[in-house]
Length: 280
Length: 280
Image 1 (tube, rainbow over the protein chains, first blue to last red):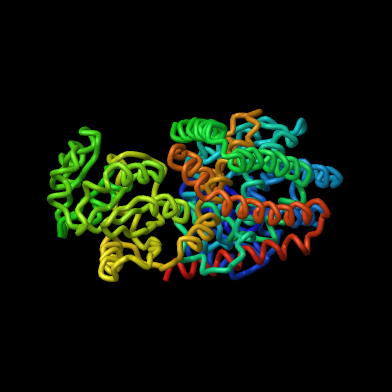
Image 2: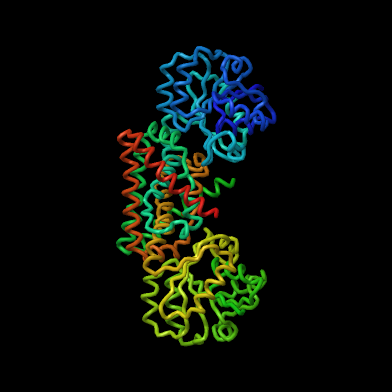
């Protein structure tokens, strides 16, 4: 089918690469360089910097914009978008996004999804379909979504390589992702930020530090957006994390080896069970 | 030369693998299965479960034991170890270890070093020399160490593949490693431990969560030992981390996008500078 991509960045480019073997990919981006790059590298078959020709050619469109930009894009252009088009958005936040978009009287079907995948790079030149292989995907169905469009989003996610697709309410999505993704990024940033730099850190790190801090090389515009628009859940998860950290701290402070090993064994068992599920 | 390995576990096996192409490797372990495995897989050339023949054949010996076991090994066997032998220990803690070992009237030269490398597996069967490639190594020279023995430890570390060797006091080593290694492991454990498990976590994680929590699959015996024997520095680093986390938390709580982005940009720049040094 003819699949459109609005926003040829890391995610838009990766989705195009993951689907372009069996579909015709058509890109839209304000930046002509991104279009040229994507065409020259056979990521998309056709590309536009104007909406009119773009919407004439597509049946389903992935909206690959940052949450704030996404809302203003729909507010500014909803009247130019044909009612028959299925739009699939892919942000990492849902409740607040949906609250804002609800106010816009759009008439096309808009599907809310979250591919849980990415990398610490930006731009179409960093795109790669491999980030989707065996990854997790979430769809937040709205009561006004048409079933066949939800099925289409599901089917295309599987074609991209996602191996587990969950259906969740926006609220539940935001709670879960505040823990698995947003808390994780905040901890990585806070770890790097707590370096007092009294020594040349690079000479004393191993793979554990490298792995924990890789995501500190963050897209600050996107992630401040994601943090602030899922604020309450994220603050709750930070509190829960602090309580958990305090348990380890107390066991160490009190030389309580038994309690410390118990905490470690519990965390280890929890993480290993996850590993098994991941490998399945 | 004839190099001995006391303790054929993950680290002992990896050191043997990293050196056995150009040296004769001789193992000592209480467990005959570890000796058999290492011989059958050509990791060592010869192996013993008794100390007498072992020390007859070696010139330099890597002590690959957990810190607590290391102290009791030296206490119990120092009188059986020839004075001419160079022993190189490889634990992740130094000050407390040296304080305890100092009380033992041994006469051989004992070099304190820390290869900053490892993996989340245990035993000789999980050993691999690749963990040392381009990794960091620390040597804590004592005033009673002979220079030629320090040079030997340095030379062998380079042969194993380590690319940066630092010379530090035990105190400074413990301060730095409390941040780069021990804090990192505590955070990973506390993150997994803070999972309220109200949902099936495996379906909602991406690579960022996987990377941050891999080291929670920890060797609990070894690491409780490492945490408790570097207690004060680790507690200091946990406090510093909490203060850093609170800065992010406050920026999010106050919807202070400017401050949040500033914090993120600083952490990002810090981590990227590290990446450049790592790649050099």
